[in-house]
Image (cartoon, rainbow, N blue to C red):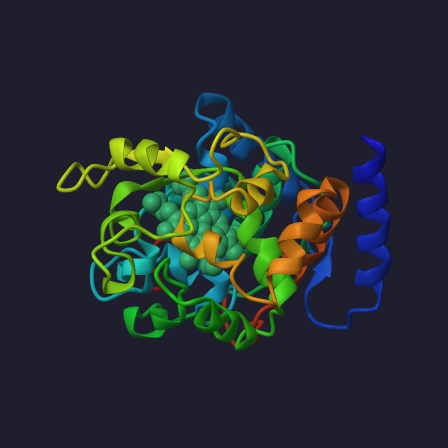
Length: 317
Ligand code: HEM
């Protein structure tokens, strides 16, 4: 294990020892000893087949946690209705079938023991590691929720949200301005669909002009990939030039006007977030370490105590 990863693991272990919640590192050690190995094997297999599953699974964990806590509710798809995943901000979520695969194997190994929410959290960590990001210990012991409602999903951050709104949405979940910057830098891997770019490229805040924070040398590139009236499902890397690897280029891109998403560019527009962008741009080791810590914090949002362990992740029944 590289030195940075070992250091991160030690730091996290010591910070986790002080936590006295129901969540704990190694929750399944006695109940289902191979649980974490099974998730890792399934995620690794899917990643080797298609590396784009890593950002998909990382995003899935964020979207699960930000609405009603990390309770697996984002996975619910049947019976078809007004579930959480129907919200606009959740569009493009992928990777649910990988969670279903892991769950099916876990049900054979230890039926009714491992929650869907925990599988999502573990899969996110494994995805970070597979993308050359930091290793961290995942607290487990989450319960799956009984509710998955599109109405609750209004708290999901939107690309067009002003920075003040993003700060409030994160604060409502106990996340600081620094957490906002560090966690949003998950965009160091992955892609976006053009339909999330339309406002920024052609009608920024109703001005009928592009977002002025886009570097003029980059604007033409973005507009060529996402032309007006073009196919909104065309995808482009969110971290321009480094979309497959977990690194700190994301911050340099923001500073240079090469951010792709409007909400990423907005991180450089506010005194509460801008200093962190500057700091992490020149200190990748701190970014890796703080990202690991912030992911543990994300995983603790609104812990569901009155839940259960679903047998099938895609259905609450
Ligand atoms: C400021 C709040 C955020 C906003 C507005 C936002 C918005 C978006 C949007 C619009 C996409 C493109 C989705 C698509 O077209 O499929 C995306 C992708 C992604 N987001 Fe975020 N996001 C935010 C924060 C986060 C956080 C905190 C994480 C994780 C900790 C995260 C992880 C990801 C990942 C990994 C992708 C790439 C997904 C893929 O390649 O399929 N995002 N985000």
